[in-house]
Amino acid sequence: MLVDLHTHSNASDGVLAPEQLLARAEKNGVELLALTDHDTMHGVQALQQGLASGTLKVSLQLVPGAEITSLCGGRCVHIVGLWLDAGSSELQGLLAGQRQVREERAERIAHKLAGQGVEHAYQGALQHAGSAAVSRPHFARYLVEQGHCATEQQAFKRWLGKGKVADVACAWPQLERVVSVIQAAGGLAVLAHPLKYGLTRTRLTDLLAQFAAAGGEAVELVSGAQPQAATRDLLQLCQRQGLACSSGSDFHSPAQTWCDIGRQPALPEAATAVWELR
Ligand code: AMP
Ligand code: MN
Ligand code: MN
Ligand code: MN
View 1 (tube, rainbow, N blue to C red):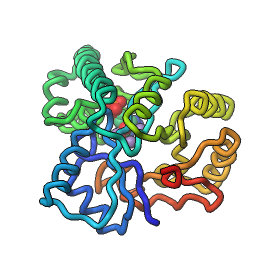
View 2 (view 1 turned 90 degrees about the vertical axis):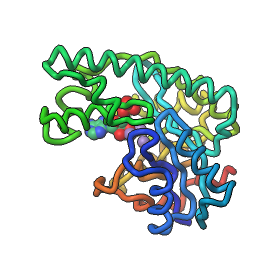
View 3 (view 1 turned 45 degrees about the horizontal axis):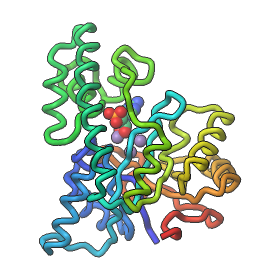
């Protein structure tokens, strides 16, 4: 089965509308697709309404999801919730809080940028966000648009990335709380892209152990284009913790040439797939 359990639409920092994302996934032959926007289910809810009313028809199975920002040991860690009930009051409460954190963070980022000679970044980022919750890529797009740098990656490298001038600490919820809210909403909790936090092997092992102790169900064993050796090694760590495995492209845009929807490497045979837990 061709799956992709990690994608973004323009309800967060992706560029395709949810309907366009769905069409692209179908065209790529994806059979099980999760839309997992950052800290919001607005895109998922729009798709669910379209599917329920019949205005939207697809052959693939849509998994309602979200990628929730959390803190673990003072570090930002992303937790993907899959098969979420968007109507859960616990989940809605958490997401409302996340939106507020994002808005406050955006003002502080803009303030830091102003100190660096970048004007009107708050309004600029909001314009790029549209109705989506504002995120750092919206700032990156503004910085590129205004000629402060050539690419979004450069904007992260110079201002927005970890430890850079416009990196501000945020009151995201703790990992344990996020796992429990996901489960209260009937979902499965998946630790997103564990190899992208820049952790030493010891810290990575600790993170997996802490996630398992919090009741998390699975780890994103495959995220985007990833070397096979890294997958093999991570699979061992997952198995040791009794964690199942997920797989996703982390697709944001058709311009993201390294991994289109559903084009990430397949899960190894030996892995217990998270969709088998359903
Ligand atoms: P936020 O959720 O507002 O903290 O923004 C995080 C998002 O920024 C990630 O999901 C990526 O889409 C994007 N991002 C993070 N780091 C980089 C980077 N170095 N270059 C480009 N995009 C990045
Ligand atoms: Mn993103
Ligand atoms: Mn992420
Ligand atoms: Mn993502």
